[in-house]
Length: 68
Image 1 (cartoon, rainbow, N blue to C red):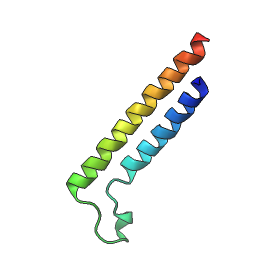
Image 2 (tube, rainbow, N blue to C red):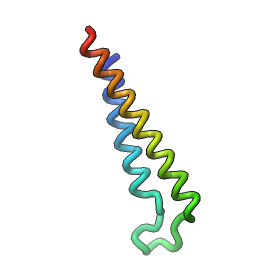
Image 3 (spheres, rainbow, N blue to C red):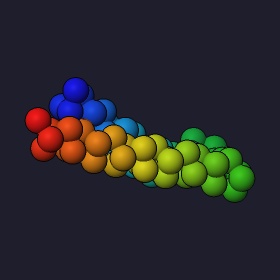
Image 4 (cartoon, helix red, strand yellow):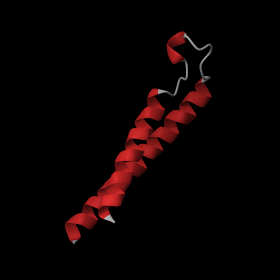
């Protein structure tokens, strides 16, 4: 169970960082207009929550592995 939680935490953290990196949605200016500011901030907020959940999951998995 600890390995699953740690793996899930890493994957969630990576997806959270990718969400935050692509929050503007502008494709480097080649894809038309990007997201507006409220949408961008919402995506960044969800990315932060995903990273926080991933860190909590990883820490829980680490504690389970250290306990057994």
